[in-house]
Every structure is written in C-alpha cells, then in structure tokens.
Amino acid sequence: MELTERKKKVLRSVVDLYIRTAEPVGSKAITALPDMKYSSATIRNEMADLTAMGYLEQPHTSAGRIPSASGYRLYVDELMMDYRLSIDETKSINTAIEEKMQRVDKLVEKMAKLVSQATNLPAISAASRSGSARVQHFELVQSGKGSIILVLMLEGDQVVNKLIKLPVSLTEMELKLLSAVLNASMTDLSLEDFTAELMEKVMRSAGAAAPLVPVILDFTQETLKNHGSTNMAVFGQSRLLGLPEYQDVNKAQRVMASIDEDALSNLPAVMQNANGTKVLVGPENVADELKDSSVVMTKFDIGDGMQGMIGVVGPTRMDYAQVTARLSYFAESLSKMFAKPEQAHLPEGTEETNE
Image (tube, rainbow, N blue to C red):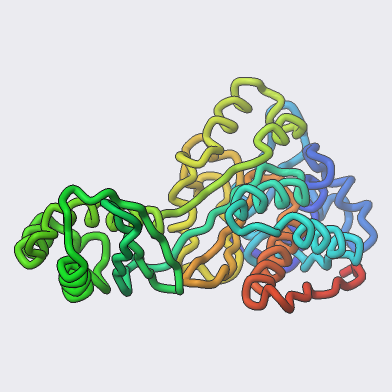
C-alpha cells in the first residue's frame, strides 16, 4: 500500500491533534480542520489504511485513532512543521541563561533545571570531554619543610594541584631530577597508558625520590579519570505526573525510576556522533521502561575540548516541533556564550508564524 501525500497529511493532522488533546482522534475532528478538503468517508478510509500500515493504532475503548511509534517516527522525520519561537519565548530563555549560567561548575545541574522549566518535561543535561585527557607538563614546587605541591598542566590550559607530604627528605636537585623524569616519561599519555610497568620504569629512574612516584601516579590517574568523565544531571521527573499517559501510578513509578543519571548514562555516547537534534521514539530508547516514551536530545560546544548535551524525556505524544525548537535554541545560545563569554550576545527571537 502506497503512503500517498493525502495519507501523510491525514497522519500529520492526527498526530497534531493528539499532541494537543491527548484524546483519540476521530475522522470528524480531522474533517473539521480548515485545511482538510476531503469528505469524512475519505478520511475514515485513509485512517483505516494508516492503521493497517502500522502508523495509527485504535485503543479498545474508543473508535478514534492514536499514533503508533512508527507514526511518530514518520512525523518527526518528514511531516512536522517547523516551530518558530516567539519573542517572549526567546527572551525567557535568554534571561534564564544570562542570570543563572554564571558559574561553569554548576553548569550541568542548572542546564537540566532550565530546560525542564522551558519544556515542562523531565530534562537531562551532561558535560563530557571529547577524547581522553592527557598531562602536558608536571611541576614540583617546594612548599615549606617536608612537603611539595604537585602541579599538573592538562590539555586545554587546565591546571590541577595537590599538596603532598614527602615520605622521605629530598634535596632540590633530587626533586628537579624527578620532575625531569616525569616530563620525559608520563606526559601526553592517556589514562590507559598508566600501567604498573610504567610505574616501575619511573621509579627506577627517580633515584632517591622513588617513594614519591606511587603517590604522584595515583593522583595523576585520579585526575585524568575525573577530567575525562561525564557529569550528568536529571531534573523535573515529577512533571510526568501531570500528563495523562502517566496517571497509572505503577507505570509512572517505573518510568520515573528509569530517568536518572545511571539509567541514562549512555545517552552522551549516543549523541557523540549525532548531527543536530536526535529523537528516540518509544522502542528506540535505551531503557525498556521508556518504550512508551520519547527522548529528544541535542548537543553544543562548551570549549576546552568539552561537549554539552541537553534533552528531555516525555510521552510519545509530546510536541516534537516545539521541543526540538526550544532545545536547538538553548544549544545555539549556550555554544555562542561559551565561545565568547565576554561578548556573548544571544540571538534575537522572531515572531511566531503560522505555517
């Protein structure tokens, strides 16, 4: 059976109406639309065909139809209209970002909260470093009697340090020798390169400073692990309770339990090679509990080799056009802000238009 342009128009109308009302859609409702020029009988036949093709489903309790996961997928890929943010929407997002994104160390938590507030859905945010972190330079600085400061200079001009109490008394020359050994043997290595064999090699070359090597290696490995990890936050799970799809308490509890950092930890990897916005509809999702829900995600650049991701979780009935427009605007604004924080001017909004 061919998916004609008329069938696509009917399917788009069914999805649009179901998104707005959360009620099964009948042929009369489609016929009443101002741009629908077909008879009620024609609409019924087309809806029957779309049901047979797997794009619509008929709940047992109603004669109306609702979109299937395949129907939502076709809608997202081909049928939905572009959603233009209104000036008020863009101003609201800009104000929220400018007021609340003051400290990068709270970036992930704040992003999740802002996106959840803007979409009225549970939101996910993440910040991860692309590629593995590496140390560019080691520095050992004497700090009073019996202690030194270990300084690690990482890629992207990141600097971390640690105060270390010396297990043995060392001269300035012995510390300089250790520093030279560290820079010759342990720079530009990934976390996986820090093996027991490497530690033995460095200790053999470190002379009297050899007892310091395990302490330095432990701190270096911990730093690289944290530097290359993904920070993730989820906010607004309780917003699902206000939606018709989650009125069943057991279903709502299962879904809400699956919307946490551990259950969704592989989403940043899903987005790693994605271009633009990615939509996971129903069974395409990463968790079985989300098979009746959808996830919409997009990514943006933070700078210093870091990438951010924002997304939302909601019913398959969500307003995909509006959600993707808002997420895209968030991502665009955040990328510009982090590219030139001292000159960040968020893009002006445009009036909402009817398409």
